[in-house]
Length: 125
Figure 1 (cartoon, rainbow, N blue to C red):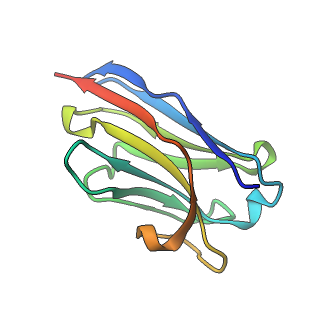
Figure 2: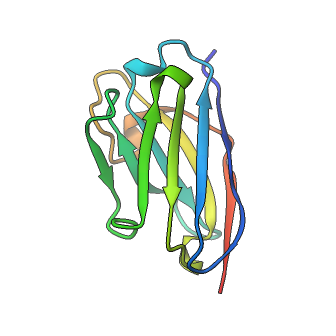
């Protein structure tokens, strides 16, 4: 009964910020690493950021390092993606995902077993 629901997407001007949220219905949320992926039209889904179940370790794609921050609040069963200094090339559908068991920080899609429906982020130039 895992259900991941993303929110916070929308339209923003280049240089602006958005914060995405992903709420997990699973009560054992705190036992799993989480991640964010994105998919632009005509492109493959790509890794954006990942976070360990403790929140103590994170990983980022080179394209977003220094601009995006992943965090989690296990008390709220929620993972966040703070996106700053947004660029038009960040335009994509962003997906929240839960990693498989025994994953510390997942860097590829194969490390994840549950996915949200996605939320659209559009950055205008």
